[in-house]
Image (cartoon, rainbow, N blue to C red; front, side):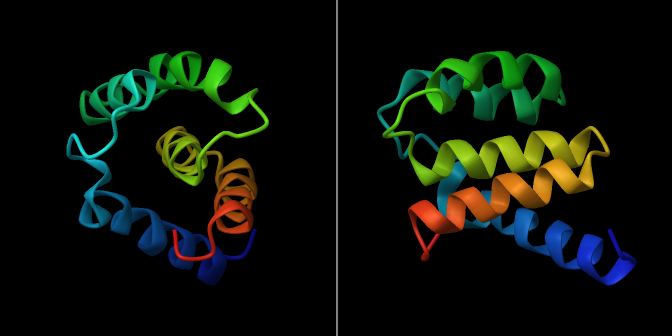
Amino acid sequence: MTRPTCTWLALCLLLVPAAGFGQESSPSRPLAEARGLIEQERPEAALEVLDPVLRQRTAPAEAFLLLAYCHLLLGEQTAAATALESALERDPDA
């Protein structure tokens, strides 16, 4: 992944908290738990919590945004970009 792409991805993911994903705006317990783990800088634990949500056909875009953020925290830029693309496919306004 090129440096400009990584920079763009990082900037997009910085918008996750600004979009309200750091707040209790969702009634979904797993997503709230994953957000809390991310805030505690525990992306591996957040990935475990997100896994069953992401396996659902109807997984919300927010789950994929959180997945992207976890991968970015783990230094996995390609996986983060893939997750971000999945989020945008589910909700172009994400």
